[in-house]
Every structure is written in C-alpha cells, then in structure tokens.
Amino acid sequence: MSFGKFTEGLSERFQRLSTTVSGKAQEFSQGIPTTHRYMQEKLGHVTDISEMPQEYIDLTTKVDAIKLIYNHFLQVTQVYDNESYDYPKYINESINEFSKTVGSKIQELTRAASAHEAQSILSAPGPAKDPKTLNYALSRVSLVSSECMQHLSTHDDALLASYLMKYSDTQSRVAQARLHQDSLIQTHFNARLREDIDGNLRRAHKVRRDVENKRLTYDASRTHLEKAKPEKEAQLRVQMETAEEEFAQATENAIVVMQEVIAGTNFMPLLRELAAAQWSYHENAAQRMQAFLSNFPGDGEDEKPPMATHPHIASQHDVPAPAPHTKTSGVSEGFPAISMSDEPEDNATEEHPLL
Image (cartoon, rainbow, N blue to C red; front, top):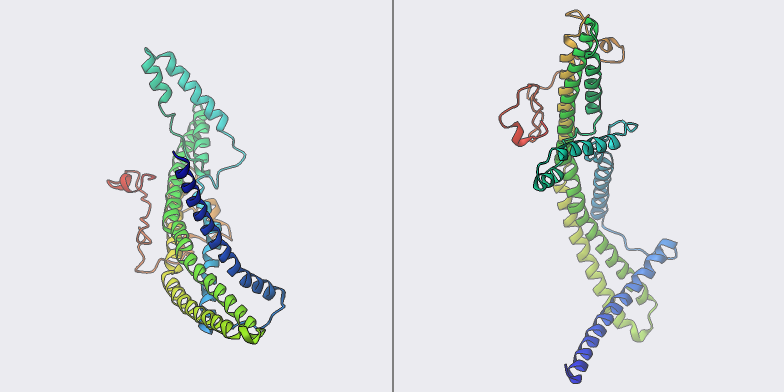
C-alpha cells in the first residue's frame, strides 16, 4: 500500500468519526434542556407544566393497571417453570445418583469386548431419572418401603407392602398429572403474559416515553421564549411552535397505541386457562387418591376417608356441581383433561408426552 492511499484512507476514517461524534454531540446538546427541565420539575423548582388530556391520563392509568396485574401474577406463576418447586429441600440425591451412574458405567465397561464398544458405553446417556417433585419423592419412598416389607414373612407385612406399592403407583400418576398441569400453565399462561409484557405493554411504554420527552421539550421552549431577549424572540417562538406540534402529534399517537394495547390485552381468558389447568390437575389427583382409599382395608363401603370427617374439610357433596355447559373432562379449549385410565390413549403420547 502506498503512502498516499494510506493517508487517504486515514483521512476518510477520521472524517466518518468526526461526523459520528458531531451527531452524538448534537443529540446530547439537544437532550440537555429536557434533562435540565426534568430535574427542575422533580425538585419542584417549576410548576408551569403542561397538562395532559384526560383521555391520555385515563389510558395510562389503565395500561399501568394491566402491567401491574401481569407482572405480579408472573412473579408468582413463574414457579411453574421450575419442576422441583415442591420437592423436599432436605433430600440430597445428587451424590448417590452420580455414584450409581458411575458404578453402572464401570460394570458395563468390564464387559466391553472392544475399544469401540467401550466408547459407545461411555457416550451413552445415563438411566432416566424421575422428575424431582414431591409426588415422585413419595412414590419412590413408598416403593423402597414396599420392597423392604416384602422381605418379611407375616401376612400383615405382605399386605402393607402391597398397599405401599399401590400408593407408590398412585403418587407416580399424580406426579405425571402435576407435570402436565405445569406444562399447560407454562405455555398457555406464563408464555402469553411474557408475550404481552414484551410486546404490547413495552410498545405502550415506548410511546409514553416519547410523549414525555416531547412535553419536556415543549415546556422548556416555552420557558426560554418567556425569558428571551427581543432579538431572539422570533427564533425561539418558531422552536416553541414546532415543539408544541410535535408534542400534540406524539400525544395523539400514544392515545391510539394505548387503545390498541388495551384492546389486545384481555386477562380474563388467561385467568380461565390458569384455573382450568389447576382444576384438571386437582380433580385428577383427588380421583386417584379416592380410588386408592376406596378399597383400603378396614374401611366400610359407606365409610368416608378419615380426613373427610374433619369439620374444616368440605365433603364431595358440598362442592357445587359444574355448570351444565362445563365439560368435566376438559375445562377449557387447549387444556385437555388428564385421563384417569391406566391404559395409554392413542394420541396421548404424541400430544402430551408427560402422560
């Protein structure tokens, strides 16, 4: 490269840098009056603040209420994104699980006949693990307890082992239902809340911020015009009128956008989806527990489970029946109810692998 081309390239890059810096400096200098005005208003040094139209105020109040509801609900329901939210914290199985996995790999490696087979064993995934949920924990501890009781020889011990096994199976199926509920809430409630927060509500926030900036510019230009010297009054008046027009246009645009945002955010269907997923899960869990208790040894045919007689626990007959149009097998569209059948449905595996 010749020295002439080098200097030309350097000069061109310097010119581009100068243009960029000049533009940024101009933006910064334009922002100084609005920033100064903002600080004066916050400190109470100025009281001549342009009033916003009542329609604009009402819309901002409603948008703020929607955002508050969405954010507060999401702060709570995001717990459903964490599989182990109800898992007992004092159970620490990571070391035991790791040691079992390593031990299993070592045993398999001792039977490997070639280096290729050994490599396949090392790269193969470990055994599938049960999700860390309270019901799965109850299922596992019941299963282990049942296996312990099976080593004893008395009739009572064998009966207890049998019912521990049944309880383990019941809790396992309840755990599957809970995971299905969580999946529905994640996709039909949490995801849609985040979509509205990141989309519509952020859009409303953006236009409101633009209105605030335009309002500060307009109020600052009015103040400058009031204090202007006669020779600068004409120039500052033009600036003030331009700022006033931009402020009015930004306000009108914000009103339209906020109306669209409010029309596009309806929390009622989302709340119904949340309740539907919870209802389907709790109904399924209650039916499975009732089925387990119905044949419990020592209970008469008409005898209720022990806790059902507690004065603070309503019996099944005290719960009002669903409305005639309500489907007991599927509360809401998009929320298929969890089947009580132990036989897998034809399409259940494809659509809902958790079942």
